[in-house]
Length: 81
Image 1 (cartoon, helix red, strand yellow):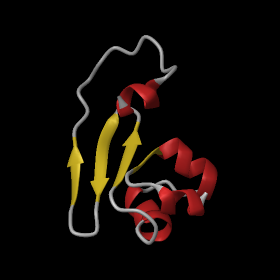
Image 2 (cartoon, one colour; image 1 turned 135 degrees about the horizontal axis):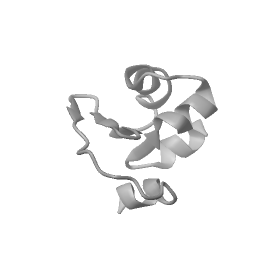
Image 3 (cartoon, helix red, strand yellow; image 1 turned 135 degrees about the vertical axis):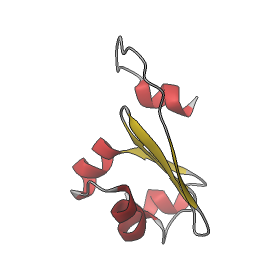
Image 4 (tube, one colour; image 1 turned 90 degrees about the vertical axis):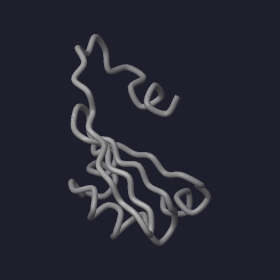
């Protein structure tokens, strides 16, 4: 997994991804402990919660507008698109 991080120009993952892979629940922990050494920038999504962006020089939080969810199938692909 970490080797793949090294090949990425941008890494995007969800809170569920990182909870499953590393047992980590906080975006800052994921970035500092698992991502920063390998890849810059990093986008952390968390369902209906804020999106977090981390780079070595900058971090920010972006609010997610409330929407009525019909289906979560393909949610990550839709975010990426």
